[in-house]
Length: 272
Picture 1 (cartoon, rainbow, N blue to C red):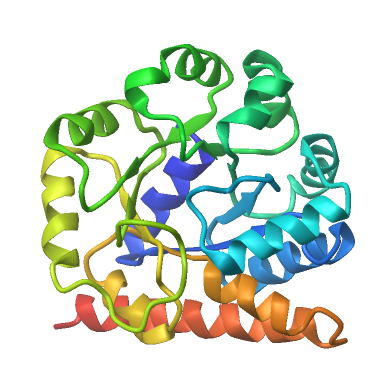
Picture 2: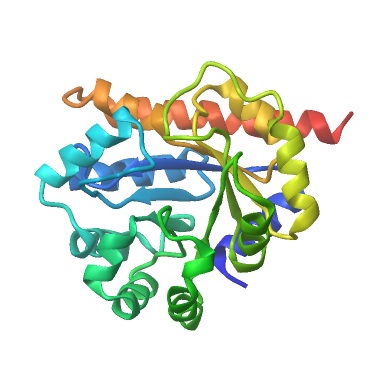
């Protein structure tokens, strides 16, 4: 059982969903990223998703694209990320690396899986790699007991959903909207129905991301999904406070508000 599996098992016993914040490593700089990870872990993050900077982040909207660019301008790549996660691995919750396929191919899939495992990475998301085409990568990842998390979108055909259900380890990532990441004012009306449908086809936990930015949205999704991913809102907070001395404290307060909201919604659900 992986650390991600154990985290979901522990939260399920408490009737709670996992809070999974996302940041791009190296935005605004590597030292600040490291401090933000620690603060988010201290303030209620159950797992943390780390974005690997890439020049063409096709799944991401303008806010996260800008963060990728800032990190790349700082010279951040996989080697720098692994050195950071190696320092952190014994004192933080599970880390999930979100990377596009090209950096993995350049690094070498076997070496990438090995270095992920040795440096404290628990799971990997490769948004431009489908499970139908991922046989070689899945084999390398499973040798290292590294969870590969695949995505389902609102327009995914049933056959793709079947592939994801059979191939994902750790959890299934459901993107709540078709298209790129970014904050949305409203959640899709059929979100709960779709997530329940995925859970009927798979025993894996389902985490929902893309477009989730407010405590109210986190609370709503926490009623029916096992995990909630918050990305653009966190990256936007970094962008708005790039030179502010209280960035880390402000981020801690924001993550704490999301975590408290999520736990409160689960507590109410368990007592209705």
